[in-house]
Length: 361
Image 1 (tube, rainbow, N blue to C red):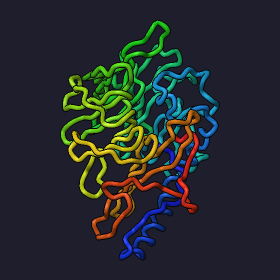
Image 2: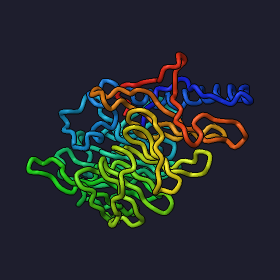
Image 3: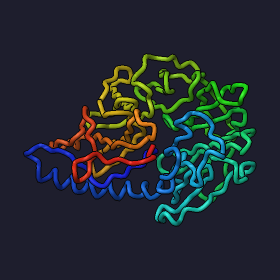
Image 4: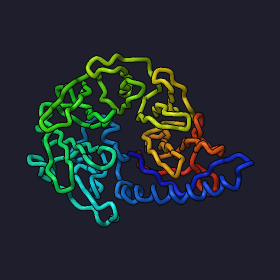
């Protein structure tokens, strides 16, 4: 999930549609401000962290409790019924209609209830009907994945105790996890695997795929095939467990999403230097966005879909954000929308300068 500090969006329209374009631009500015302000308020507590949001995942290693600041890292958020649920090691929740002051502790499943036990990943199905969370106890001796089907319902064990799952993904309506496969003599993870998890109670892990020295960062299902990637390797195919590695799509891939950008669905993969886009899942074109592009957010206004992606300057060790980029779907009404199909339009402030952020990843 990417936090965006966006107040205004600068877009260019055909001269023949300037009036309509300005109206749409004003609407988009207001809607984006309202949409993203909630996220900004949510993540304010993370601004003073030594690493950004998702930093423990970005570093691709376990972070000891002593390394965490007073305001812990947010590692997942989803809607469940009429509430938002998030994990920043502890699970918290608040009503959808509530505000920042309404966040409060949510229950952990039995066996993971001490203050040092962590919910290290949380994802939710579209529509807010089910959430999934991976838990680890304080001493890293007990692990499991649970699902929850209602706000007041119980946590239901999916029976993955034998697997050290550090991230969860929902791809093609299936549940996957990145798991530790091996550790060195110092206890540091040094090999990983992709696991497919059954979504019914006690189903456990139903398929595995070795991914080498790095965990899976993201994935998507497009044109009948899964595409998963680590920092260095891309796996593509239709059967988990025998996914072959393929040529690199983009340097250091970060996230993937299937997005309708006006000409039908396309597969977008972000990484260092831009975004790779494909119509068929096998042939990719790189859209330059500048520096490293991270996670995606999808936003819809009327008949127009917007894909928002956060960026950072990978050459700077302090990890500041250096702006955000947006690609828009053509509404099909003859109005030219900046970013349609082939471009990433940089979101700028009133001065025309790119909007930036600290610790936003």
